[in-house]
Length: 551
Image 1 (cartoon, rainbow, N blue to C red):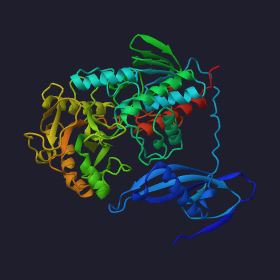
Image 2 (image 1 turned 120 degrees about the vertical axis):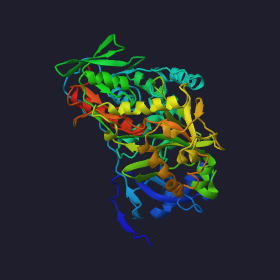
Image 3 (image 1 turned 45 degrees about the vertical axis):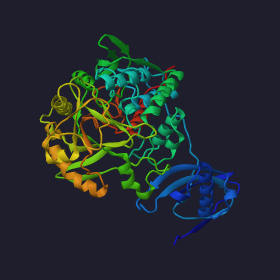
Image 4 (image 1 turned 90 degrees about the vertical axis):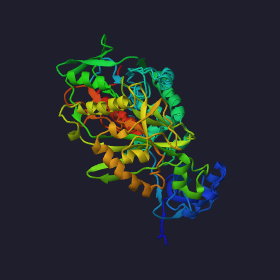
């Protein structure tokens, strides 16, 4: 029984009152067309408010999620905002609250003069959104990127997948849009920050589908994301910003501990006293050069493992039962984790209806990642299956030891698969038993390059493979079919997050270099598109707080 409260607000105070109404449940079978969906939600919202639906002037979906805990009855769960006259008396429950009008204020600008325009290094989510926010507020940033623009980058990456010829400067890790450009384009995040809404709104304005504004697990898909990245670049340029591609940061110029310039491609100095360092987690050569220049780094935990593939149809049935294949549900995903012997084993970057992609950025190495298009309509589901590793696993206290740790297993994967660029693959059952697969089973590998059947136990440490094997039965109890014998493993997944963190103070600035602002996933402060973009905005705010707008 719901306990109702009644309240009345003064007449004439506002023309309309805006409510957010949560937990509006719609049985999957009741959901048909978009028009009927809005009509139905209006009726259900009016019922909760105890008013007539005709009294609702505006209604907007702000969140849509799927409740599939009962396979026999799957519900869609909505949150909506509505506008109506405020002079009425309403009955409300805990699912209803009044929304105050948002107050948008221009960000405050600092007083310190800025010599030359700020330079943003990297055009992944952190760099793009730092650059966008600075450009929107009159700072006209220069964004430099070691790789190529997304149009050229896409062609180069697709050629690598076809021929195995790797461009070490433009690849899945490097280039406009960052590593997330060749992914599922997931926009889920664990952070609770009001800036998330701005990120989603800007992505939508740049061409992402409207549903990212309200889906509980929004995604763009690599196919749409590439166009979104291009449109964000065009917007920044229209606001006075500038992009330079094939411009790799190779060192920085300092004067008494202060930024005075950046060096690109070892031969050109760009004067600046403000640098937003938004390089990705794979910019290993840049980390090395910046360490030599005096920037501080500390080791950070991350995770390594493999990609695991199952038939998408099996995942759909396991998650949705008889409703599998329903157009409103789409391709099912999953998220699994367990603690074993002091380590965490978990699924990561799950790509429904996707592809396992070759993602190396260095010669003679194998790196894998997952990618889906917006439709998520490929035959297989894939996810990273990874195990946590700690700095004490790296074998040395050197601040960049995590990078060498990653390299060790990337090179091993390259070697055991034949030293020819093939990725090692194996049936799940054989991996658990520790024997070589004779052939793959009914589940075929979706890997974008060539593959070689190998024993993946040979290219990962036992403190990773043992917990991984032990987790399979537990995960199979959580997700029926996860432990299927013919599931395909592809090695190796090593770039789950940055192996380093660049310290910064309360103003998000390097404590040892004045004017250097580390940002995003590569600096160790984010884990995904939205959180990296939010961190880029936060850093841009701090730049503005310290420095005056250029005249």
